[in-house]
Each structure stands twice: as C-alpha cells, then as structure tokens.
Image 1 (tube, one colour):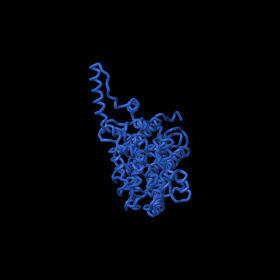
Image 2 (image 1 turned 90 degrees about the vertical axis):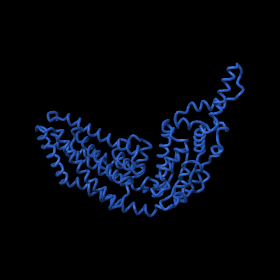
Image 3 (image 1 turned 120 degrees about the horizontal axis):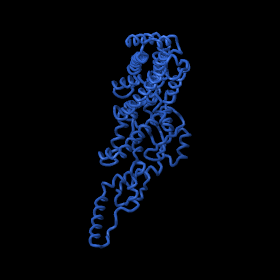
Image 4 (image 1 turned 60 degrees about the vertical axis):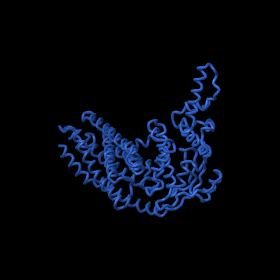
Amino acid sequence: MFGQVLLMQFKQGLRNKQYMFWTVFFPIALGTLFSFAFKSIYNNEQTQVIPVAVIVEDSAIEEYKVMEAFSGLGESSLEDDVAAYQETMAVAAAKGEECDMDNPISDELSEALDSVESFDDLRKISFDVFPEKYVSDEVSNITEDDLPFIEVINTVTYEDGTHIIDRKEAGNMEEAEQLLKDGEIKGIIVVSSLTDISLKVYDNGTSESILTSIISTYKRQMDMVIAVMNDEELSAEYDNMDSILDEKLSNVDFVEASGIAGENKDPFVAYFYNLIAMICLMGSMSALSAIVHNQANQSTEGMRIDVSPVNKTVYELAQYVAITIMQLIILMAALTYYMYVLKIRYGGDVGMIYLTAAASSFLGTSLGFMVGHIGTAKEDFKSMILLVITVGGGFMSGLMYPDMKAIIEEKFPLFNRINPSAVLTDAFLTLNLYGVGTRYYRTMAYVGILTVVFMAVGLIFSRRKQYASL
C-alpha cells in the first residue's frame, strides 16, 4: 500500500500546474532576474575603493589594553615575585618577625583578578589597576591602529589586491557626519569596544553592503575569540590572547581571494540563499493540500479514507515521502541551474551544498504536514497561514531587504531560530563563511530539530482526528 500511495501522490504532484509553477518556474524566473540585476551591479562596483570615516572611542582602546595586560601577566615576572613574597612571608612568620617585602599584588588588583570569570568580567576592570612593572611598553603604548578591527580594515583587500577601505580623517563625530552628508564618504564606522562596532550610512548600495559584511564577519569571529577565552580547556591550547586573535581573524581570509564573506564575498548571494529556502517552503503547500484532502470534514476523499481499513498514519507518511522526493528533484534541478547556468557561487563544498539543500527540503514538507493537521479550518485558511510563514519569513530572513535578518538578530534573535526561512538561509551562509564545522553542524541541528518537531506535532494531531468527532 505504501508504494501505491507514494506513486499516486507523485503523479498528482506532477499534474498540479499551480504547484509546478510556484516551485519550478517561478523560482527559476526570479533567480534569473536576480542574477542579471545583482551580478551586473556587483561586478561593476566590486573593486571600487570605499571611503569611510572611522571613529574610535577611548573605551575601545582601554578595553584592549586591559585584555592585553591581563593576557601578559603570565609572561611577566609577577608569578616569580608572588612566589618570592610568599616565601619571605613564610620565613618571617617562622621567625616571628614582620615581613619587610611589599605584596606585588595590590588589594585592588587581587580583587579585580578574583572577580574575572568571563570576558564580560574582564572588560569591567580598569587598566590603572595593573602595576606598571608587569605591563610591557607595547601594551602601555597601544593606540587605535593596534585594535584588531582597525588592523582588519587597514588590510582587507579585493581579489585583485585592491584595498577595500580608504580611511578619511575625521576628528569627531560631527566632522564625520558632515563628510557623510556631503557624499565624501560612504559610511561612518564607530568602534566602541572590541565587539561593539556600528555603521552609519545614508544609502543602501553595494559599498554599504560590503561594509556591513566586513563588520558582521569580524563580529562573528570575535564571538569565537570570546568563546575560546571563556572556555578554560580551549584557552589553554593558546599561548596568549594574541594567538587566539591571530588564528580566528586570519581564518576569515580577509586578504585571500576567497574574500570578505567566506568563499563568496558577493553580498547579493544572500538572495539566492533565500530562493532555495523559498523553494523548500513552497513544498509545504503541496504537503498541506494532501493532508487536508485526507480529512473527512474537508473532502469526500477524506471521508472514504477515514472509514476505510487503511492505516491513516502510513497513508499520510507515504504522501509525505512522495512530496519530499518531488521537492528534492525540483530543488536539485533549481540548484544546478543556479550554480552551473547562472554561475552563482554559493560558497563551500559542492557536495555539502547539495546535501544541505536536501536536508532543507524535509523541513519544508514537514511544515505543511504540521499545519495541515492543526485545527479543522478550511484549506484556504491554512494555505494563507503557510503563505504568511513563507513570504513573511522570507522577508524577515532578507529576501526583500538583505539587512532585515541582521536587524532581527539584534532585536529578537530567538525569532531567527524558529523562522524556517532564517534557519535555512543560515545553513548556506554558515557553509560559505565557515565551511563544515561546529557552526555548520549547529545550524543543521536547528534544521533537524524543527523538522522533527513539525513532524511530531503533525502525527500527534493526526491520531487525534476521528470522523466521529468532526
């Protein structure tokens, strides 16, 4: 029975003109339009030098000094001085005398060090509590040019070696805003701390998108640096904080040909991530239609199924498998068209790109499977709900406005974890930026969790539906 239902559902899908239009022809047409529109824009501007003003606040320099001073304590003579002090104290105590040696660690420094359990605790310490004896001249003389982010923007280049950013002098924020107003710069970057980097722009073109990509990529890498610093086992693998920074920031490949956003620095590639997500979620419409027509209060076919000896769960799972297989075929065809005809570089290993897309297709059909089982509303109403989730979720993940996903991440990050469109685009973005690793597996875990949850909810509601109760 399973095979017969699967084959029947597969044939029905092929005959459904509306389904074939929205999952095959529309994404291909939209992808072609995106390719012609965005690729020409990006190719024309991808090697233009971007003039910007950079405002570095004193708090950022202070924070970096504290981190470097704290990191350098282990390389200073502090440990030997403390050991000598403790030995002198012990000898004096044994003789019943007072110790005439000063404690190398002041009460203020001792209290500060005892309070440090994470990076957030460290950034609260004042640089003044570190004794000059244990702070190198290099650390004391740190300037804004030594900050990790400033080093990044001073060295980041296009593939042909052209420097991306041209820093314009601005003594303060007012001067910078005047330069921006006059059109002499594309944006103002404000560095408030190692992780607090903000960008002010007036336009929303390619240059602004590239600046946003640089800042976003830097922030993600700094998050990884902080995660290592907060983990005792991981931080023990490094000599000091500088070695962590060198590894994490160099791995972004800012200078290499792979570009500012992993293997593809084109900011418009995010549109094609969203296109794949849209195709996956369009499969939910077909799954919804199949499930609704199985319900006795929706169609005569549902009445016959409900009173027949057919195992309804097996019947619906066969439909789910058929729709998912069809979605896989459509998705693989669309992805092949994007990559080999339109020459879109998704970034990452090609095999993993296809595997990621395949896993994503299960999420889309699972969503339709769940919505189709919830409640007793008509198909039109449930389709409207799916449309809101698909189109609205696509907007929130950057299909219409590329910065929207970043805005949501800042204001309400949980939404990006439960928005199917955002989860799916994250999978491709992570593959492009970081390759197959911890971040990619974590993103794919979100895909798997949502798929399982959607299927479980659908099956639970499916078992609760009986003809007599409708």
